[in-house]
Amino acid sequence: MKPAPFAYTKAKTLKEAVTLLAKHKDDARLLAGGQSLIATLNMRLSAPDLLIDINGIKNLNGIAKKGKYVEIGALARHAQVEHSDVVAKHAPLIALAMPHIGHPAIRNRGTFGGSIAFADPAAELPACLLALGGEIDIAGCALVYPTGPRSFFSLCGDGTALTVRLDDAGKAAGKARTAKLFDAVKDPVTEKGVRRGDTWYFVSFTGDVVPLQTTGGTTKAGARWSLLDAADRKASWRPGGMQHLSLHAASGRLYSLMHKGGEYSHKDPGTEVWVYDLSNRKRQSRFALEAPATSINITQDANPVLFAIFIGAGKVDVYDPKGGKLLRSIAEIGFTPTTLVSY
Ligand SMILES: Cc1cc2nc3c(=O)[nH]c(=O)nc-3n(C[C@H](O)[C@H](O)[C@H](O)COP(=O)(O)OP(=O)(O)OC[C@H]3O[C@@H](n4cnc5c(N)ncnc54)[C@H](O)[C@@H]3O)c2cc1C
Image 1 (cartoon, rainbow, N blue to C red):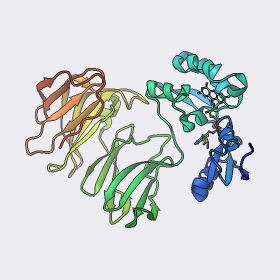
Image 2: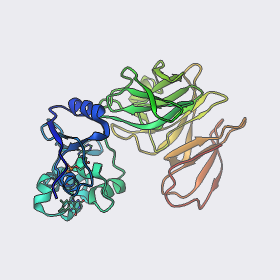
Image 3: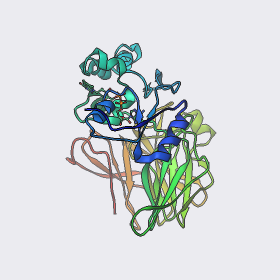
Image 4: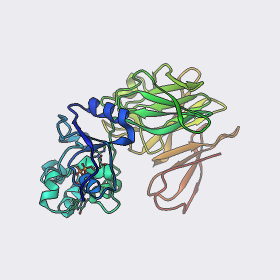
C-alpha cells in the first residue's frame, strides 16, 4: 500500500516545529527517524495532511551527563545511544536494551525521542525510561491544573503557563499564555504544585516559590520568593522528593520536604520538613524527620497531622506538624508508595 497524499516541510528550529504543530494540530505529524511513522502511513493507519521533518533541527541529538542525570537528545539515533560511553557508564540499562531494538538499519535511523513519543508498549526505551524514573523535557505544554469552572492551565517548556477556557460543550473557547514564569533550563519548577483558593504554588529546583493566581479564566504570576536564605543555600538545602509540597489551606501554612543536595537532586528524599506562613512568606519552623521521606501530605482539619512516606519503605509515618514529633507509623501499606491523598 502507499500512503495517502501529504504535504512535507522541514523545520529548521524547535520553535518553527512547535508553531507548525500548534497551527495544524492533529492534521500534522513530526517526522524523526520515520521507522514507525512511515509504516503507519503506508498501512494507512494514519493519514496526516502534513509531515514536519525535524531532522534538520540543530542541537537535538546530544548525549551528555548533567549532574546525576544522563541527558539524551530527542534526535539521538538508537545506534548513537547504543555506542555511547556516557550511556554505558551512567545508564547501563539503556545500553543493555539498545541491541534488542530491531536490527542495525532500524537503529541507524530510529531516534530516542521517536521511540518515546510513539510509546509502543512492547518497545524497549519507554520501559527503560519508566524503570529508571526518567523525565521528558518538552517544548509544548503539559499537565492539567484546574483553575475554576471550565478552565485549567498547563505548564509549558518555554517557562510560561497556558490557560484554556472551555465552553458549555467542553470545547476550547479561549487560550492565553502568561509571561515567562521560570527558566526551564536553568531552574525549572517541579510539576508538584499545590493549590489554595485561586492560587497555585510551584517550587523551582533551587527553592524559589512561583505562585500562579488564577481568576476568571486568566492566570498571572504572583510575586516570586525563596524558601531559602543565604545560609540555607550555602549549606546546599533544596526542596525535593516525589510529592514534596503540601499546604494547610485554613492556616495558610506551606510544608516543604527539604534535603541537602546539588543540581538535579530534586527527586532526592527529604530529611527535614520546613514550614512557611504564606501571609508573610517566612519560615515558621522546621523539623527533622525520623526517616527520610519522598512524599508528604498534611490533613486539612483544625488539628492536622502530617503523613510522610518513603518509596520502598512500605509504611506511613504520622507526625505532629507543630513540633515535628513522630506520633506513630502505619505498616504494610504496599511496596512502592508514591502518592498521599488526604481529605
Ligand atoms: C522493522 C522494525 C523493527 C523494530 N523493532 C523494534 C524493537 O525491537 N524495539 C523497539 O523498541 N522499537 C522497534 N522499532 C521501532 C523503532 O525503535 C523506531 O525507531 C521508533 O519507534 C520510532 O522512532 P523514529 O525516530 O523512527 O520515529 P518516527 O517513526 O519518525 O515517529 C514516530 C512517532 O513519534 C512522533 N515523534 C517522533 N519524534 C518526536 C519528537 N521528538 N517529539 C514528539 N513526537 C515525535 C512522530 O510524529 C510519530 O507519531 C522497530 C521498527 C521497525 C521498522
